Image (cartoon, rainbow, N blue to C red; front, top):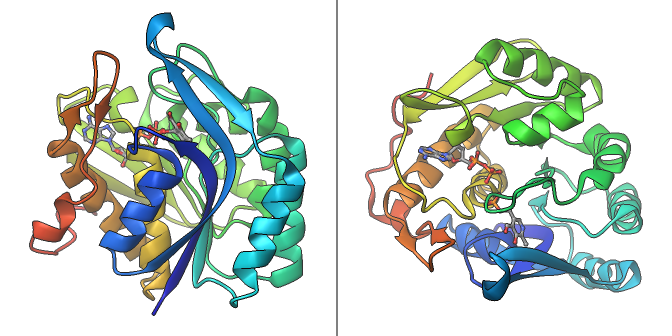
Length: 274
Ligand SMILES: Nc1ncnc2c1ncn2[C@@H]1O[C@H](COP(=O)(O)OP(=O)(O)O)[C@@H](O)[C@H]1O
Ligand SMILES: Cc1ncc(COP(=O)(O)O)c(C=O)c1O
């Protein structure tokens, strides 16, 4: 049995965060485990504003010790992390146990929030986590922050940002253009330090996209655990999340969920990705 681990925050609505990760891990036939770093709640009486309560770094460390006591996972991902102290604990545990297949989803900006939620974490993610990442999966906003380039508007901007982020030590980078990049296609850009690959799917005109980023990174993680190469893992994840978005449903007036179970009913070729 292949084991997967997420180190991430809780989204009690079940769409994003560690809940999305665990569902995706299971859908892709891996045994999911989680270390919880924070609890996010959203306020219906305050325009769905997000509140983040962080779990103490020592509790995060104890969860990771508990998990690693069963042996290393076959792949792991990080999602929303508390603050620099949590990020430091995660790096220390990675240095101690040397797990393979590390996916860093640098969660700094959430859909449904006006601003950047965790911008102060950007520096520590850059310094402590990118150097140990087999792949990092920023969205367009996060790639702009991590690269220092600010607003990214074109695929050429994405290429330049990917190179800068690769130089910080991430072995591979996939920047999610998603709905933030204008056009009829949703374009993600994969960079392995030498070549660029564009991952393209038709844009879905929907607001039911909460959790898409978490799910994309979790599908990469599970696919790596299953022995796929990085490019294949990213292609599978693109198909997985595309199907999940296309079968999403509204949760309330502010939020629409994707359906993490959509991929299981597909015929499993990786689609038109190039
Ligand atoms: N409306 C959409 N139509 C098709 N694909 C989308 C859409 N929105 C997001 N995606 C895809 O979902 C994945 C997650 O992207 P995104 O939503 O930008 O991430 P995040 O949740 O981190 O902001 C990417 O593969 C992106 O291309
Ligand atoms: C715990 C948690 N992690 C991550 C995210 C980011 O979600 P998404 O995949 O939509 O970017 C959210 C968004 O609300 C969240 O609550």
